[in-house]
Image (cartoon, rainbow, N blue to C red):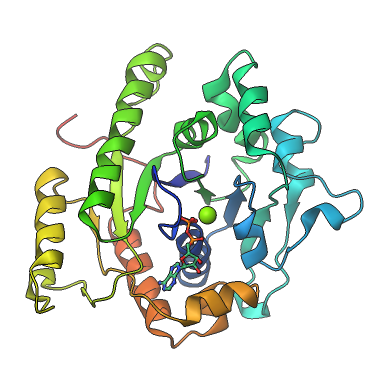
Length: 291
Ligand SMILES: Nc1ncnc2c1ncn2[C@@H]1O[C@H](COP(=O)(O)OP(=O)(O)O)[C@@H](O)[C@H]1O
Ligand SMILES: [Mg+2]
């Protein structure tokens, strides 16, 4: 059975995609016992850092994601076991690379099937895992598009601001273009925004009765309303709260929920992972009734 692939995407950087991919992967491994792989495609390789690989290029003879994309190494050669607490074994990492983002875009663009680069890179290992989480880049350039192409589920991660909700619409436009230009031509099912995560939230928005949130203003109500209206059933709750411990966890090279399991952001990630599992994000996609 091929792995289910979840790609965390957005059209902006700094929306907590990487922090979310790291934390959610740990929760999935802990609570489902499934074989999990996280893929670091960002040239800043923050995801690799979260799993203790600060300078992957310093590891002699170690292949990385760019080697795999360029066909210079098999995917297996770029997969490492994070050296964090025993309790959190079960997440493998496809190692990031300190590459020039624009150069990789160019390299992929000049290949014969640019949109397929990630599908191709993952194909040899797709049966070795149950769930693969891709930490997409902060834009929908060629690298971001290919990361989305490999997805069973596309999850947008955004900070709860109106401008960011519009970023989700931007992402959706890119997916529609991929559907029209590529996927329909080769008989792949259409992509859509399957879930929306709001992170770095100053307020607590729980799983239950999100509209009960009291902030003294109407902004967060408006965000929830606008999102629910534009994307019925796609909002994944709770919001992940802002916590000063998240940057500390990054410096300590650990996902927040390994670094400080009782932190409020860790609690939120635990609940978010539960929501995602309940909604079927770790299982193969069944065609929605509307399709
Ligand atoms: N819940 C949070 N609370 C506080 N800071 C956060 C939180 N989530 C992410 N951050 C910080 O925001 C910045 C961007 O997060 P990151 O996960 O790297 O986003 P992206 O991958 O989308 O660029 C980082 O400095 C990170 O430490
Ligand atoms: Mg990132």
